[in-house]
Image (cartoon, rainbow over all chains, first blue to last red; front, side):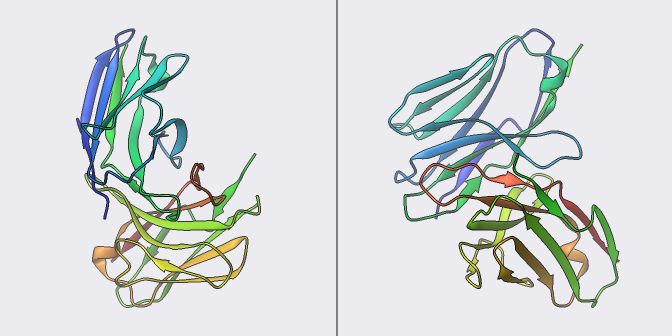
Length: 113
Length: 113
């Protein structure tokens, strides 16, 4: 089955700086890669996703890049703000017939004011 | 807005008790999922269901069972709770298909003593 590794496990950045979280996956059949954000006391919420036919996707201050050859994808947050402090999870989905998402182990991002 | 609700935010049970965790979604989603979240291990899938009375094992089904008698409700059952089942339990729902968002409930923090 799919295996997703996520790094780093914790990340602290100064407010206004950029943050990058990286994930690798094992199954070349995976074709959908979402990122979820979990704020304190809440369930995870989708913030951005990318499909395997796209190399990069942006939504305001967040972007995701995908390298299918190397089997890795990354989340980039620019101009970080205190409300970006949360736990972030990457995930991968194997194929069209499989409803399962395989999640990474999470990154706790702390924005230092 | 999609809403996924879980019956309890916090639950304390004794070893050997039978425990029921209930999840209800209000958006007529076919898919429902149960995960457990542990520090350093991310989100691990216990069971999921893609239709009423249908269920499939996830990555860590041992010690758990599920029930889905109605489309909107998905129950997780711990037949005989053990201390190693102390964890945060998250329920999610989604539409079927290759690209979809999972909507999560707020979670139930279960402590087994």
